[in-house]
Amino acid sequence: MATHQAVLIAGDGIGPEVTAAVRRTLAAVETPVEWIEHRAGIAALETGDDVLPDETLEAIGRYGVALKGPCTTPVGEGFTSVNVQLRKRLKLYAAVRPVRNLEGVPTRFDGVDTIIIRENTEGLYSGIENQITDDAVMSMKVATESACERIARWSFRFATRRQRKKITVFHKANIMKMTDGLFLRCARQIHQQEYPNIEYREVIIDAGCMKLVQDPTQFDILLLENLYGDVVSDLYAGLVGGLGVVPGANYGDEQAVFEAVHGSAPDIAGKGIANPLALLMSAVMMLNHLADTRNDESCRTAADRIKGAYDRALKDGKKTGDLGGDLGTEAFADAVIERL
Image (cartoon, rainbow, N blue to C red; front, side, top):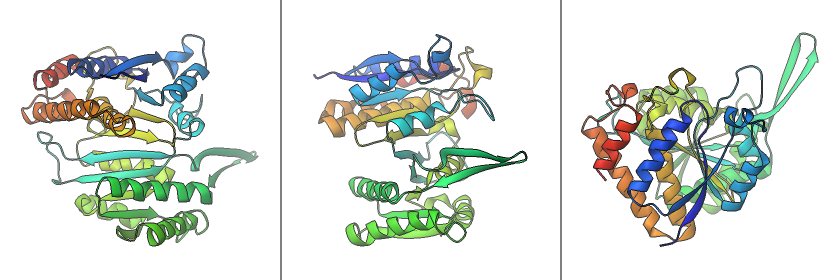
């Protein structure tokens, strides 16, 4: 059986704890992955390195795939987000967040099964900010035709592979007629010229957010620009139990980084109570990606076994404290491993 090398970034705060639990779970199914460990975030700064060391970027470029725990981002000051830097420097232009109900995690809605696709490199997250006068600053929203076409084409291709039926674009082109207008024009063009078989809708984002909290099951795939995708994906996660029960992935043409989408939670770091499920779900996405790109069905078999095991664990009431249970990080991993 072939072994696939993948970069592992434990991250900050609870990152090392949830990463250890995920490694142990993948080892229990003899997953054909060899981990190449690197640092990023505060963990890298504490060793005297940059927040995103060149060797970490080079390793992801070399091996093509990485699993990353949460990295701390200072609010209002300090260094630029590690996540933003990774996405821009490795051209990881497609962020994917699957959101679904999990049996055993009661929520207001049932039957939620939506995939949120977010353009990952432009918009207000381009980071172009300037001090205009002593009392005025400016942040610039950037959109290019090449990036808008790229994410639209990627989304329709993804929908086709996953046999999804409908893509809905959330936008504010009624106000931002040039930037969001360009995003819409590119999506329309790709739909009309290349994927007319997939249903396509456009919804102004404020009305769209109202619709999704009324009935999130009406959406299949959501396509959004960068800032909107960041906000809406977290909102959607809240409808199925929170950031602890949804995975995340960032895809480019050459590399892919899979990550827990929650924060580093320094207030509970070292207490052994963090929920490792989000990172475990992201690892399942990584295994499916390896199966797709490297023609190794053993990775898909491992992914299916792990997914089935954590689904059964939750159904049996084996949950961490954030989900109303009483298990710690390692105890939840044990519960999953027992059900493999």
